Image 1 (cartoon, rainbow, N blue to C red):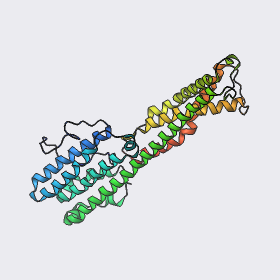
Image 2: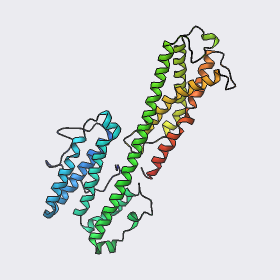
Image 3: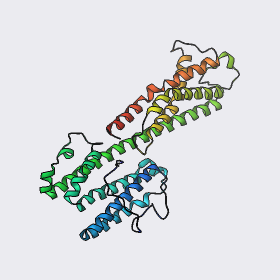
Image 4: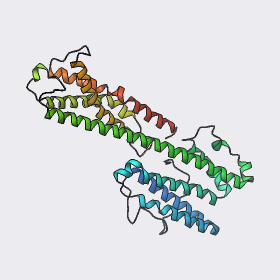
Length: 321
């Protein structure tokens, strides 16, 4: 999916032939739907201009308008499966991409020369600066061979769209993996509390001397909370400075959720090492126990750093995103 701004003609006043929503009176509710809706409206305006300017383009314009109308059906609410798989957003953007490439066929070489810098600027977000499809243009030669020029512009768009789709697919996979790990961690923590609540003879954590009368499951619950607090404190800098790159997958939010979910597990594991004597420290009071839990919870940064690095790698791929 490409979220960059593509070149467009000067907007004209809406007409009855130009849809203005994903259905009668529909207003997109998600950011990606707003972007799709805006792009569709922009393409409708371009097609309206191209169709009115040249009668020979009328049939092709009508076909492309019909193709775009199929996208509007996906601008409604999505289920959990659609949200995870991204089927609707992929269909929407790939259809828009196909129409964008087809619009090139309807433009004159002179128009394409004028629009070429905008096409190249959009492509530069995903392609290397020395990529042949990005730099293989010469105004004089291109105007002398309009069909070849048109094919080169379409090749540029095709490569840009393919690279953009691959980038967004990678981002969606990372989002799903982080979400899956977060859910697993939260379920594991809930099960730990439930098992400790139902078990009176096995204690996961040895209570300090000032908490001998506290139920084991309650002590475990407070340790988990302390671990989440430590994770939150350590995650604040990266959560504040992280950027989404215009993605519809909210990677910074997913990164924060992963840290908050993993932190309590790291805290419990760390305290078990302390109690087992594998770490040279002692916890003689409840305050000390919770303090150690906060420290270990903050240590989740070492565990979740792989997700931060992968998100940073993805976002730096888009040099201008």
